[in-house]
Length: 355
Ligand SMILES: Nc1ncnc2c1ncn2[C@@H]1O[C@H](COP(=O)(O)OP(=O)(O)O)[C@@H](O)[C@H]1O
Ligand SMILES: [Mg+2]
Image (tube, rainbow, N blue to C red; front, top):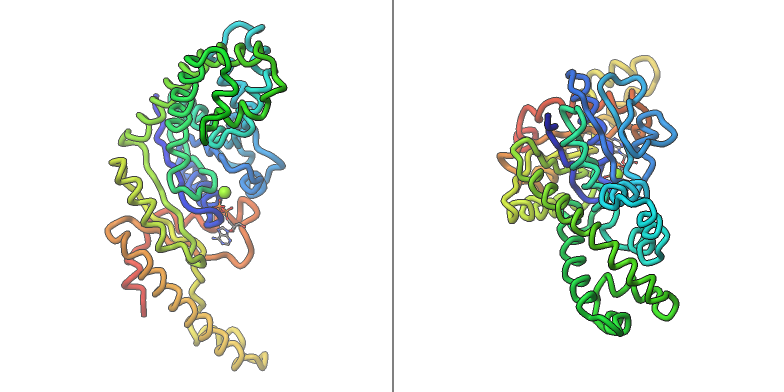
């Protein structure tokens, strides 16, 4: 059985982690078996789910039937990759303790993203979930996460082959070559590491590379399945709403399409003036309450107008609007308050909500 997959994409700080958790909770509430995977090293998801920390492999979230959650741990994930492709225990421990390898794991840009996709490919294929929700890491480059496996594979293939062909004098030649990531990893140890160390690394990495190529091919295939959806999150209170179109464009350049847009943290509409006056009746604050009401209502309307303008590019796309809670969502109950807003698209297009 093969799970559906939702990638939650967007700039940093807009609410990707929160939205992923709410989508997962909503699906679990509908009876699906859900895995929520965060690739964000921040602890926010764990806290909102009422836990100190999340495990590397998905485990049940206490109090929520059908929901498992995990936070990808870079070193555990790499250990898993190695265990998959190097069967001999001695070789495995040689590679793990090799300084080139350690530097690669901790410093290679995209290393976390790569191993995360390895975990996701495994979960979708092997585990018994109906849905896997992936909370992607903060990205300046819109689709960095989706591209990581391919990029990593390319760098390895190109640079490694050149290095292997290089033979003697390998390190100085590599160090002279401009800009390469492998070069940087090697340069860290030039003059320090032994040739044996480097040779051992390159040899063992050949097997890892073959495995990585295969996984990155499967990750790509997953992205193109009809069961895979891309949800883009933007925040109403940030300047980047207009920039979100770039995400859509970058997806379409790859013949992938956005499934939905979530506009998070909209100013919640205040109750109408009469209700505010009624609520304040007898307190002597009637005047203040109505003035406050009209200020908030005006601000909310202005924000909606701005959001509508900045998201015109998303016309025709299902859109969900999520109000800004007075306090940050910190527990399951808070997240549950957001569930109705992601349960179905905003009834009317944002444009028609403009007074
Ligand atoms: N609807 C919301 N109402 C109030 N605060 C929110 C809401 N959504 C997210 N936040 C807060 O905004 C911040 C960023 O949210 P987060 O989900 O961590 O974003 P991202 O994963 O994109 O970085 C967090 O402090 C979070 O608690
Ligand atoms: Mg996050």
